[in-house]
Amino acid sequence: MVLRALLGLTLAAALIASFPVRVAACTCGGTSEDSALEHADVAFVGVVAAVEDPNLLSWFTYSTGDPILYTFAVEESLKSDPGRFVVIRSYRDGSSCGVPMAIGERWRIYAHRQDLFGNVRDGELWVWLCDANQRLATGLPAPPVPGSTAPIMVIGVAAAGLLVLGTLASRRRRVPREPAA
Image (cartoon, rainbow, N blue to C red; front, side):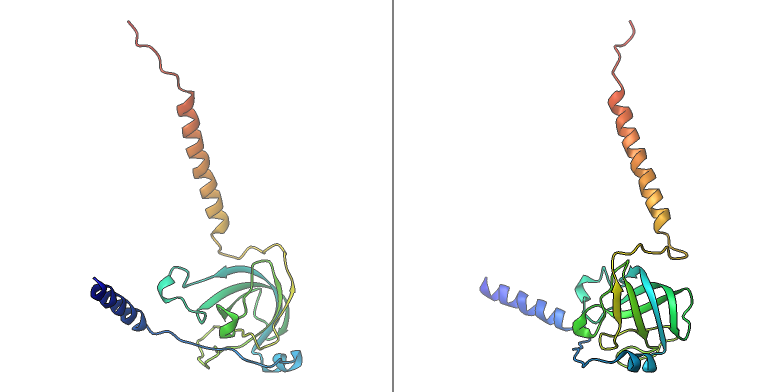
């Protein structure tokens, strides 16, 4: 019995160890705002309008180095106009140099066209913990993102809920009648 348990644990450990995981540790000294602006490819002030976690359901391969996508409504361009809305990537956690952000927060962002490891992908912008990015305010209303299906989904869920409640209520009101003689 003990042998089977040890064999099972060994097999489970080998299976888990066989999945590649990128590990990063973040240590940095402070970067001045002037230096961050000089080295950034894009800089702006904006409000986080949406947060997307592409690996949300990948619990088995979860990593602090997974990218999180933040959609910003740009209020003020500081360098290289990103447009009205821009998607910024950052790692999931501060231990991997990520910048955790939440919907409704206003930030001053200094973004780069490459990730922390120097990988450049067309159109992607990245932020890191060490780049003087600064949260300026919290609790702001999130601007609607063009093409977002969230309002449609809310209306659909509300309509479905009302339909179910209406059906249940109508079933309760029905009183059985005695059969006609």
